[in-house]
Length: 466
Image (cartoon, rainbow, N blue to C red):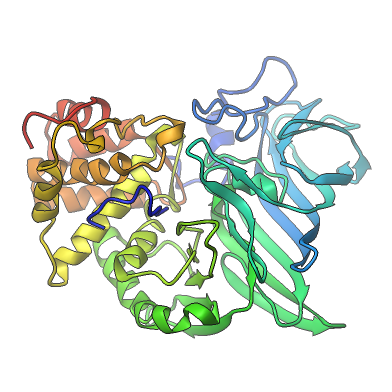
């Protein structure tokens, strides 16, 4: 994510498929005792995010949206796998009215408890058993307000909706196991009035028009966290092509932003090629951008395969959100306190891109930040555990990038870039933690790095030495 109010001034188990990895390793620490799924996965910042007792293999979402009335009708079919016998389980859903709910085609009792949709199936799925949940719902979706005061989720615009779900907004438009620890494949079937375009993640499989409405069918096959899903709707100019390496690009641009966006989006293939050379093979078969005009949002977000931008991006923002496809999307968080693994990495990618394309060296960017006085806000929040209200504050981005540069200086370029590539490869389509990254860096470099990580990520205040 980029956020102008907080943006720095310098501008595993991954080898196992999807949720099966956690199932086979028995990793479900947040479960309540007994055959009941927990109401959250135990994240310290968002304790009700996600749910225990199951993992979702696939979401099949069917949406119908009217931008004039702002009314949404939805049907979500979740194919899930229980990690224990489930007499009751939760889904995350905010604000919308549930009009029907079945588990394996049998009507299931359900009730609302804040953002929790509590489901009691007629027959409890057993441990290791697949089951299917179908939820029909409707209403006027709107965003949630995050602890830092920003909006995320379904954000209405003057011609549709800007849909950006990090960290908690997915539940504003579909029932979800809404935490990055649970990653799934997706189908999106979205119907909108003629003249509007609906853009989601992955590859566009079909587009058909009938009776004044157009339906778009998108498919995201690689695993994706719910917070990275989008269903952005608006009046867009669409561009489609395939890169030399076979990546299918789909750009959707608000005509009011087209002139400013065009020269930047033209560089997307070369940015992805650059990232592939530095970080390893691009993780997806699709790419692109959604450039909307969404002043209420005020940020860009790395929605998987197709970042959303609230206005025409500059090149550094394009590089930032593209780098997230490796760091944040393919390699996702295990806990939101490790947000620097997303934002510090994407910010440092900006520095690397500038360094390798005739701009300032990364050391110059580091030195400029280190010259900031000790009483500056840059040093007020430890990026390794910033707190929910500071999740996207400048220290997470800038000091996170400074941590990586300090690591690079300590271990040398050869080891450092090997660490980045290995991290992206070993955790591809999975999750990671700060401790795992530190151990990897120690393994590759042969050096003890505990003090470096503690100083730059976990201590308040300006480090004594750069």
